[in-house]
Length: 172
Image (cartoon, rainbow, N blue to C red; front, top):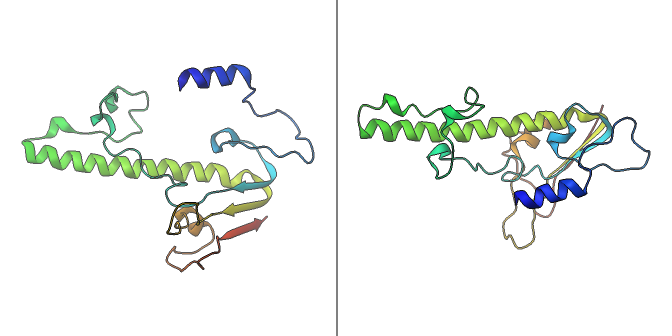
């Protein structure tokens, strides 16, 4: 994968164009790439639980094979730590691991929330938030993202009409 990414980067211009945008041109960017920029209209698609925010990938942290222990990472001060040295016995260690795993999931959600916070204020005039709840090959509808329901003032508990995916447009 890294070789493919390096090849693609060498063949394509991945940077966002500097200066004024050309009228009528649509720019597709990741949330990361949009940081610090602004457009008249911004669309944030796929605000569905499991997509944005993504399903927690981290649940074991550095306890997985091939992962660097948290204390050796460059962002060690910002990520949860497993205080395994504090364990008095095996039961205590199991409890510490469980707490660490919960902290990793919470940390991942906080990172996703930070990303949503980066995406939303990129709009100078109009913001379109969407959640496509029905997906091909999936029998049950998705659930609107907690970020979407928070942004539009809902609590996420309201029923969503079956074939309708919520679409929210916000104008400044």
